[in-house]
Length: 410
Image (cartoon, rainbow, N blue to C red; front, side):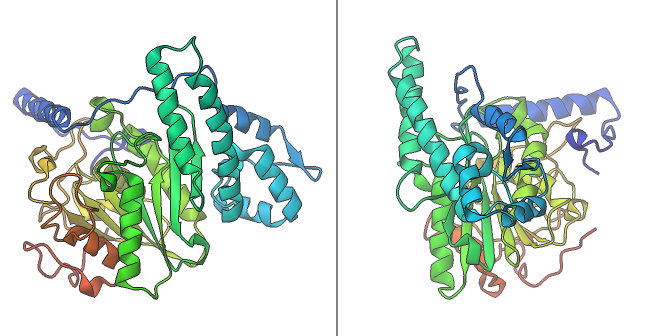
């Protein structure tokens, strides 16, 4: 079984001699070369002496409402949901306004309250960046970065946007909802990959390579696929992804941390909805790690352009969800060695026949970042899965019965 030292799993040594070790190291060197030639550039961390959310969490832990201590912000979503249900409307609003960086990120808190809290948190963060952008003590590069963050906060505060999570610390985390999440029967979660942060959450140029564009395109296509279906899509950049070329992109540490956050998100979604995960690039590593303890409401996990799911076979994912995989013929990631050696690498290729995933067509995706572009077969397939219409999907030529065959699970 593939190792997960980040989660405390045993890590058997897969090599037996020096030649094997050198071959593995050579293969990993190829990984880094590929990353270096595909535009994955490092993003500098946001400067500052304080972490605003950590300060807010400290204040929350010492706070109270209506004479009662506040629950742990790390409590299960069900516990937090019951806590908020016990409060009056005025007390809920008071907490959201007093602790926006806490309430806006609590899985289990009412959706409208989270949206309100995150608007407040974004407004406060925008004021901070306004001051930083004019601070002569900052370097010119620092003021430019502040201006870019200010622009991003302005955009996220646009009328009608539903921000489900927001943390301005570091390079930032954010999640946004498309559709009516509270009434949705089917929820799709887009899990993006490397170099995902506040500044890359949406892009004016090449919009469908960024989480907002991916989720918006998926939601629009789901609506056109099944207009009567009650669907919602979440652009989920609420984990710390690897930044640029480095060991983080080749290991599972950040994926393991992201998996914990993804599991909590799913547990906190409105009751009664079924969930599908759409995982791109390093996001598929997050989904692979998360799969092992996902809420059973997750019916489908689809990966695109995957470097691996930290498993040798779908049975190692130990999930009742159907596993789907796709890769465009022009996706450079096909040339990256799919292996795992001592924690480096992410395991078997999900589109290999030996892995056991159902293989979807991505015939016209055009490269590593084209899977969510409107009009593509890949996006149409995602929309079919998101709406539950698997009979209409298009399979890969190498797995022409992908919609019908039974995937073996452990």
